[in-house]
Length: 108
Image 1 (cartoon, rainbow, N blue to C red):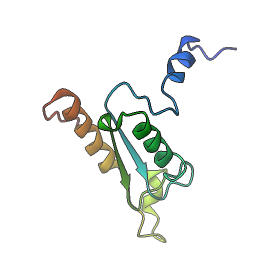
Image 2: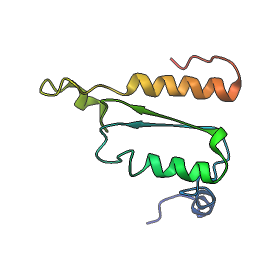
Image 3: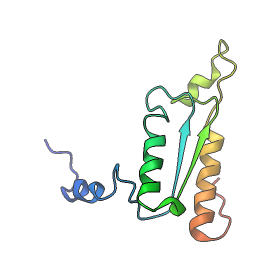
């Protein structure tokens, strides 16, 4: 069985994936303690790619201190230093809307 996706999607994504050649304003939010997609392996190299592609003015990033890959893990009483990244994600979404639309738009 196929994925149900158009074969054109791979071609379109190939134009910018892992190249940093983004075509629109982008905000990336990463979790400092994300062991599944650690910022040092995923976000930092991509930011360098965006800079090298001359697209730095279209790219912003945030690293959420103390957050992991899954917000539910922030409720672990044995690790009080962990925190949820949800509020930071929502703030980044509002920032992106404001940046793109030019006015404050509440998403909540």
